[in-house]
Length: 232
Length: 285
Image (cartoon, rainbow over all chains, first blue to last red):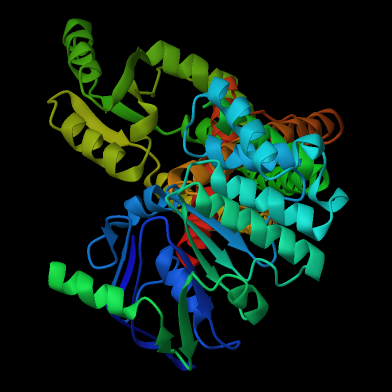
């Protein structure tokens, strides 16, 4: 699903953000990417949704490879991913419903399919009653739910979450985390970058990848990926 | 397509002040260009009337039979440069001289014989009213056996040529400078609109919008603003022209096709400005 092979990303001024990073997130898996601020979590996610390219090494995501992908295929890849950020990134002048519908419309979805799909995902995240409200009228936790609904509306194979609870209080954090677990339970892989170790501890069965100074220092799925290599 | 139209309409609705500002900016920079255009077309018209006086006169030998002259006249009218060749008899020449040179009326009055030769007066087509063409036609006229002498006021025509060349060069330089300023100003206002929505563009990209899809509403917005600005500039130019025409000097306004071309140019500049601004933005994020 997501496979990093000896990925290095260097920036001209700040040096290497990632060095020889390899990991593998499988289909329907829940994976944590942890580490301190500046450990390279966000860089790894940016490489995953092709907002950036590795200096060396290869990132494979849902059949696309950073070695071969053409610029015009990047939007196609992103339609198969759902992306959620710490700062929600909603369009302020559109209602919750319009924000979610927007993600469908840009893919050229047929108009009559948009409405029902949008309501389905808003219901899934528990916000059907607030569909007509603008982001500023919603709490942080609710805004993040809108963002998650937007990420889900294209039926992604992977949901990428970059510190999704970074701006939320504890109660909202638990709610969002539970929502991500539910989404994962229904078959969508989740790769979540976080430095909140409480969340990691709450889900011991999850795949845990820990970064430090741009290198992988722990990977609970390592043995499995070694088996993968043998299997082919 | 409907979605793109809706997004464009939304851009106008969400930032009415910025949209109005950029339309006004476009209108005023095109207005300056329009005023300059008015100066140019009026100067050109004046130059045109002056150039109509470029005329070649071939004086004929005495006793040339009229048949030979009329035959030659139709040959001369077939020259590509020539618009018309008019046969002026001795009597007509004298009548003309009497009418035009009133100071010498007494002298003409006392004449016993007509001293003025008959002539062929040749008018050139507008494109050939310059020294080179006149010279070349004059050369061919001299080859006719019955032509005594050919005159066309060479000095005067050469001065006219020089004036035209200078006016053309200055006009081109000023026009290019005005057009460039208009493009830069319009490009900047459109860039403001793009920057104002850079967050939105980033989000559109994250959810998988193609660059073409992101670009379209901006291009349409630029085209529309350019057309509106062009129309407004035309209105302003018309107002300015009406004032000048009424109170200062009689002047010509743009022909309908020139006016349409001006509005289209506004649209084109708007489109170009958007294309450059959005293109640059998309490459940098």
